[in-house]
Length: 248
Image 1 (cartoon, helix red, strand yellow):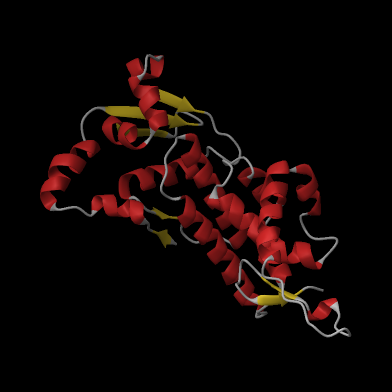
Image 2: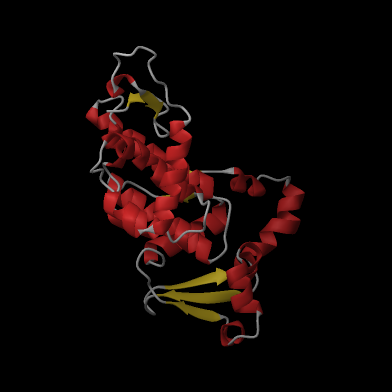
């Protein structure tokens, strides 16, 4: 799957601006970045990395050994630094877009969260809302395979505990955190034993995000005016699908 954003438009400039301002970023001195082991070594233009990443700018232009050696080792870290996430980051830095390829829904969301977390670590921005939309698209595509239009339970079908825990480590207000909380809203309101009840108790960041999204959903609450109506007749707007669903 290919994704593009406003960040890509930085490459869409008149030829003179491209030659004078952008092309030099792709040449000049190179730095070496090793991920996990020496067998995964990448030689990349220093100017490009330092221009787009304050993290790499501090690494290679600060008074550190890495700046003198023009090389750095990144240890693999579950949910953040992997061969895949680093390669996605490099593709984003070069092109302003990423292409994830074909992955099963659960793994596709894992890869997306890894990418935004390594981007956050390296202080690379511009893809946050785009990646949240990607996750929403994965959820909606998974719903479509079940051929059910309003069941809130389907919103969390391809989400896992690890997704919740990993995304909670992103900064407050990050769109990816918000979209995972949005996906849990319908099931949270409909069931006492919803899928992520434990995560809502154990992961404070997720609990705060979920409460915020629930508050928004409750503002859309519609209640019947007849005295004989039950809660099955009460509806609210599912923040993922945008459809009105029953509170039951």
